[in-house]
Length: 326
Image 1 (cartoon, one colour):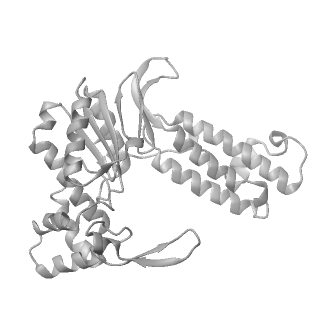
Image 2 (cartoon, rainbow, N blue to C red):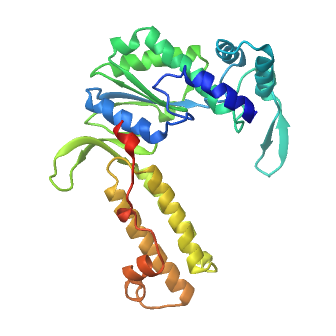
């Protein structure tokens, strides 16, 4: 299947619209985030923030294969893809028991997740929505721009056009057999409101130096809380059996991974908050491990944590993101 993907990816990549950012060579989530900010600055303040329910599981095989057949004429390749779509899927229930299901074959819907070809096929089907939006003239009539990443979708519109865009989006998605996740879908009107997209919060923010208001984006509270929970679990008292160097290595990998994703937008506050929390938790962990009663700042000062143990400090990391300026 990997060989098939390597052969098919260049064929379909040429057809995918620029509005799609997921699972594509040379594209990533940060580029999608930067594009949203660009559109906000170009007078698209009304945003329809949508999320699709089970975008892999609701794709009809017949329609998907029609999309594939527009560029692939070899019936053997088409037959092979059809077999992949209908292959049994192994699932694990709440008790850890594994079973195989053939729901995809019987329902003639769903793209099995985990296959190398699955993301490409999902993108190919989502392409239908983007093309339908443009072919119906909705991009011009609403002054709208689409930014799509897998099942996350935002439609940025001129002032007062988001409600109409929402109705048209639901109509097209209904024709494609996609279901909108109502709990994660809303209209947001900037600068009065904010919305989250791909782990970032967009809205009106204030400069720490001048206090001046501007439209921008930063890591969302949910993304920061998720990282806090991971740091807390890793530095729990029950984890003092680890070697200090091992724990610091795990913290560093986790912090660098988070920072590698959240390296665009206004990140300084989030970086400082996580630096402070990581120091607090690591000091407490060291006191518990070595049975030290003194306060953490006295026994384990910053210079010990950062220079002796080698803990990563997010506020000192430097990033090189040339694609962010494209």
